[in-house]
Length: 459
Image (tube, rainbow, N blue to C red; front, side, top):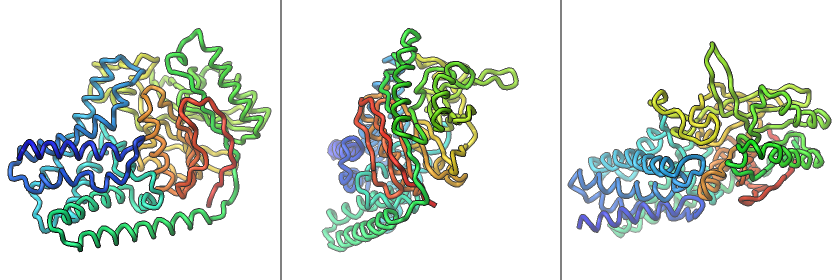
């Protein structure tokens, strides 16, 4: 009996993993946890309950997060250790969830189990230095535009609904009472109706203006980007992208995270190489850069975005949400500060300013890679006045699972805050998403491309 339960817990982990991008069988999430719940609800042994939660969690984590293990920006051993450590760490929240379910009275679990999931597995997991919002269940529904509209109510609404669906299906299979299927169908119908209304509403809103925005996807591999002998070649690639954007009369041009391996904030010659062309065309350039600052006699390194203005000025934003054990080392910084093979990575300092930049008559916000996984960061940027959000990321270190997951996260942020989102990734996936969730441009992976589009800006 116990081995059978462990098998079905394993099956739940696989089914849930298949609902995440890039496989994106999102409807699997509606019933993926039914096998796990069947045995959790029957378990009288707390130790067995913990094992069931652990097996499901570690199985799904290892599949969904496989990209951590193939991180080419560090050594093979470090990548594998980080992958296993992250996957194991994230089982803690499933285990506490399973313990909560173990002690929960049957009569209240229909709504209490979804609430418990949201609080323990998602809200608690997203606190502190090791916060990991990347795995929130809402991303499993990103291909279902009507369903995902609910995320604009509250970021965890979708997760609550998914767990509720699992409970309803479980209760029907156990009791064969048709009322549970009726509840499921009614909730799904209401969600689809609300979603359809919201999509129609946001598609009909008249924009106050349009901005011509150009997305550059250079596809320069990290080891080539940081090769000093290839610097001139890489500058020429970026120059060719810039000239194409300017030919297409782009008002704002956006490039990926650390798109130019130069400390442009202090390297005037390298900065002018690009900025002089902007000055001739009255265009703005948003690009990722490494940045160093000396504050009170101390040296700080940042993963930053630079906004170059056509008048010769510039401003920078420092990434807020650093990737633990990749961009910085929490808790042990004095012991281990260099685990990445490229300059300064592994020893970055997080920024503190939720900065928005004035461009023409608008305000724009910029996020760097992992920033976009945190709904709170985007919400604060919008509250600070952002009319449009730019996400710059690399994603070329880590295979193909991460780029697909990252783009779907950008889609969630657009719907949550009802703001246009433009993502530029080094090797993909880059794209443009409207507040309704409609994707009006999406690049292919490993495609060197420039795409220019007039993007609506709303009140």
